[in-house]
Length: 90
Image 1 (cartoon, helix red, strand yellow):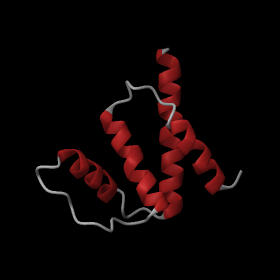
Image 2: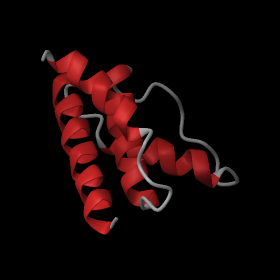
Image 3: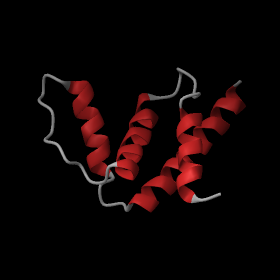
Image 4: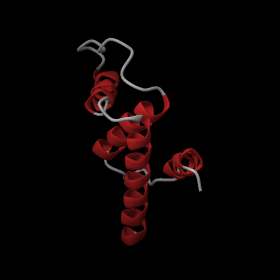
C-alpha cells in the first residue's frame, strides 16, 4: 500500500479512537496530521485567551521540522499504537 493510501486509511481509523484517548495523544495526532497534509505552520500563534487553539498550534509547531513523509509515518505509527492500547483496555 502506498504511503498516502495508508495515511488516509489510518486517518479514518483515528476517528474510531475511544473518547478516553488522552488529550496529549490527540494533540500529537493533530500536529502530525497538519504537518503531513499542509506542511509547516502557516499561521500566527493564537492568543492566550484561546487555549484550545493554542495547544493545537503548539502541537503542530513541535513537528514542523518533519518532512511530509516522516509526519505520515509517525501518524500511522501513533494511530496503530493507540488502537492497540484501546483494544487491550477493552
